[in-house]
Image (cartoon, rainbow, N blue to C red; front, side):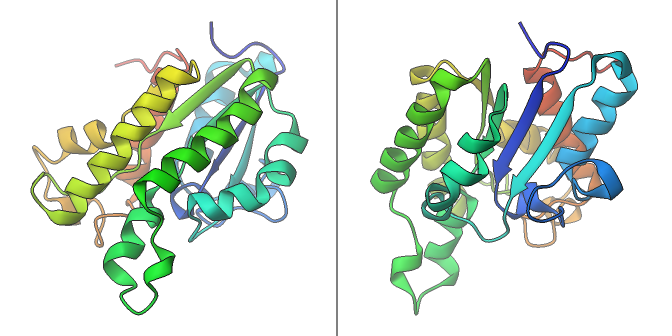
Length: 217
């Protein structure tokens, strides 16, 4: 069972979700959903199901780790009272290990990441009709690459939490791995993290598939 007429889908995360969304709450009016996959999901729903009044809310904040998400969870997620929730968090938790050598505390260790996200989902799940969990990703097909290898471990945690919290898993890493069979990773994201429009379309398609929304050819 997917989105029902009148449902709200709140999408929480970091810069991949944010993409220039409006503050304090990213809504569709005036382009407030930003320029990434969140807006693409809304546009697709609006085109296919205009009669259903489906509402998408963007609550991504650039640079966030799961610690930052925890600090704003009540105000930005629980108090918004969505029927459906999508969470994409973890890229910065890993990335800070590689780019913040002078700030070792910026990296969120795997056990803390798992524990914190588990607690947040436990608070939200009883209030929801449905939950989507997007794996963190690194657009690098070489699984031996240190950042890719670490990202895969965080992605495995998300997969386990999806089972634990009866969530629909969106394997974003698999979507990018498939694209990298035909395109160099830096042609999708120069830093292999922040996707171009094609990369955001890949994310939007993966989310819509998880919501049982038909995509056509």
